Image (cartoon, rainbow, N blue to C red; front, side):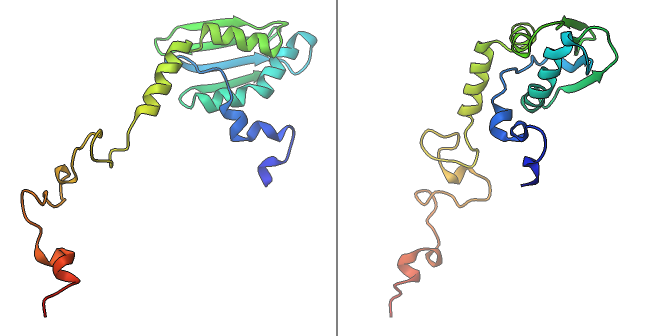
Amino acid sequence: MPFMIGKAPVRRSIQYLSAGRLALKKRVKIFSVNYNTYGSHHEGARDFVFWNIPQIQYKNPDVQVVTFKNMTPSPFIRCYFDNGQQMLIDIDSKNRNEIMQHLISVVGKSPETLAAEAKLAEKQDNPANFGVGCAKPCICTIPGQLPCPGVVPVPKHMRGKYKYQPKD
């Protein structure tokens, strides 16, 4: 498996990516992280980018995630919203867990919203299903299907009684 090669290959597994806890609000369009590859007060930002950015990208496919290296004296996160506003979040000298907790409380969806979205996703029914408790009570309501046998009799050549046991 070539995807399991490299530094910490577990980061590319579906199980790890789907375990991310940060689901950004719909208003967030761009999520940028600025940090340096050196310095002790950037350590938490480096760990956050290494371990948590893949999860954020997986959980938020409509959000552009950008990282800027070695361009700032202190690490920070900037979120750009759909109405043109920006939010700066200081992550100087914080570890990756503190950063994640702060982001969940500031730009993350609330637990109630996540529960409602999960319930909606679970409740979606396959539109091809029909019968009692489904959107379509009978297959005859679907265009191109035969009408119900109670309303219009099925042609004799389509009935097993006449097809497989013919009168001699």
